[in-house]
Length: 137
Image 1 (cartoon, rainbow, N blue to C red):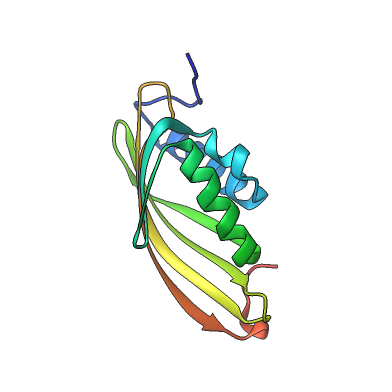
Image 2: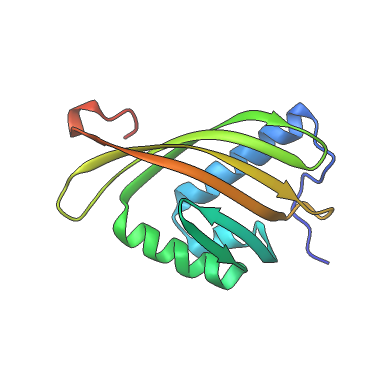
């Protein structure tokens, strides 16, 4: 059986570890790598999109990073319980025309007993920024 340590129930230390692992994976911009943190039948809401299963996650992330160029993300633990973690995040990216954006949001994560994320609900807003106003390089 697949496991992704640390496993629930989470402590502050293991919740922080899970958040850092997610940040590192997403910053790799590797849809295959990122998808392995989720259950085969994972359920997502990302903005106004509903995504079901690892295969759809991989397609979604491939398209995302074809559009959101030079993507750089920072996640912060907001709260946690036994098998749930909430994070706030911000990331920067630019489009093909060179316009930079900073995206802000919150995610709620729910994990199965094997430490795989079975649910991910993300609310995200984008802000147009000048390249001189970037926080992340």
